[in-house]
Picture 1 (cartoon, helix red, strand yellow):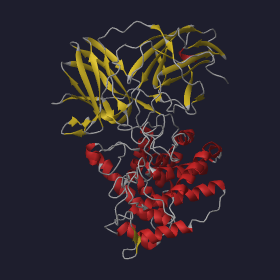
Picture 2 (cartoon, one colour):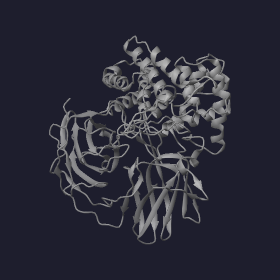
Picture 3 (cartoon, one colour):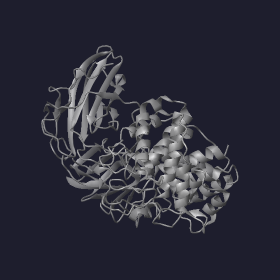
Picture 4 (tube, helix red, strand yellow):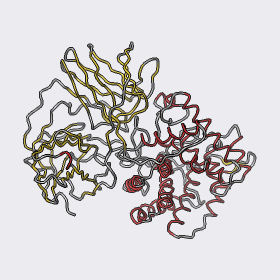
Length: 618
């Protein structure tokens, strides 16, 4: 079906700048109150209202060359005469979750198959209605800017819009829209630092407030996942987890449904006294149908339930590594999330959409960009290998081979890129800038980048083993027979340390890790003796939470011998987080103390107990 034939991309008469806002409104009448649909797309993020009721929010994550539109059934919100209002936030800067493009909005309303309203020059719009356009305060480099809303200003009058030149080659969103849940109870406490709001548990959603102020005043809302010395640590290095609001005297009711926040605590700093009727984050999640799972052990049940909650907290427009600090789609992180999702939820369209979205991020070098979408071109080579695990597992768990028709060109490109990078010694070298030779957050897992003119070529075992695993899955999916014995022999000759009976990390690093030795076992380069070393060698660098999947899978290649060991390991590591009060599972076992105080307390990759409890506790 053709869409947007008569609709035009529009913006306010005030030219767009980075971190600016546009408000658009139009009236429409319906005759039968049947099958009324709103279709829209924007750059960058929207919230739409019909008769002041929210009908949709959050533009589907996309690329300038591959944009999505939403189709929303708004029938139940309509009456005979209606008002459509759409607020669009144009972020206007490259981040790790967005690629800069021109600002714009396009929409149409259809009733019973006939278009009754379209966006165009006559659509009324305005730019200044409370939000301060151009406000520059970075939350994180991954997320981009915060916002400030001035509730004391008189909004500008509406005027006609202007058209902008953007593509009409739009694709219908293949997944559901996010849903807003009801407000949750909050606890309010006065502290020496300000007013502390406790949401009770980790929450991802949108700031809503209902307050009464004795005068006009500036209020700052700092948010975070933990309390340090009785206060929220919302400024961490160059990161600033706060939003701002200028209250008018009297009652102030406000909600921002554009910038999604996350955490458990909100710390309010105000100049004068306020009365709080409500301040909190209204939860927003991707709609899923959970698969109920019951365990005999109370600890196992708690670990499982928190893992499922962690997974859900990291599902919005796509999988997110963490809802607080980055909200970014990585292949390695989302591989864990997808694998767990096959057991936690009945839905599988979300996995498929993420895999297609990732495929659109292939860069000029022939590997996947660091995130999808991302305005930063910083590919992690090993994460391109992880994409093959994801695609293979999707086909395995769903039986849907049509995905291969859509992403196979990208799979072919990645394989050929790695083969092109392979040296005559059958090894892939540590790649130069702009590649990030990252494997995991521990000692030796982040060797960094080589300068383009650096002739001191080095090799990392993890990338080479990951490629062998990816190549085998690729060959299986496409029915290709290929001998990888020369690559295996090159790895053994280069990295195996006979005196210690283990594989070292790199040609310039004789440390050794659980991750690289587990991958060696999975590729057929290790036996039970090496497995025992992975478990017992005190000099072996421990795998972090994200990469323990490779350790567990290597151990499971020996049948049930290590089954209890794996279960005990999961219980011990996750019980520590539960005992510390976790309502979602952490990025690493150090929790908030990691990454100089910026460790996330909710990270999707840490939901892996879902998978292992399902396959081991049958």
